[in-house]
Image 1: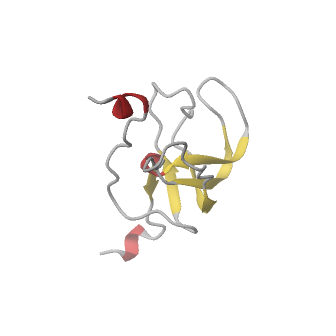
Image 2: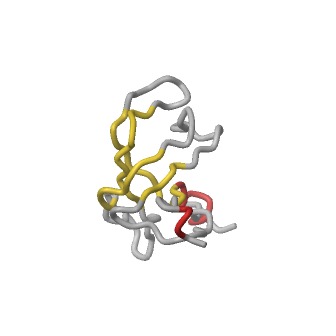
Image 3: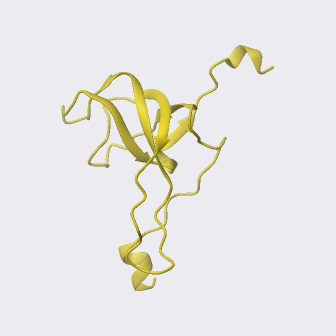
Length: 103
């Protein structure tokens, strides 16, 4: 492992439909994350997240998206309520708003 991978780990591989503005998503939480939610809140992607300028040439942060929740969301440690928040794309799972129309 080189020093870059140690300090800037790569995001998990993204699977499933592409995320974009207007998509209905669930925010997938892992209990080991400091900002884990009580549950997997559902919301709509309303904007791209803040992608800061990389401090090192060639270093890119994973894409992030701002999600507006359908109901206020709380973290597992009780912080909140949050009406919207920004998450890396690998934590978002696209939800089909009309699952019965798919087959």
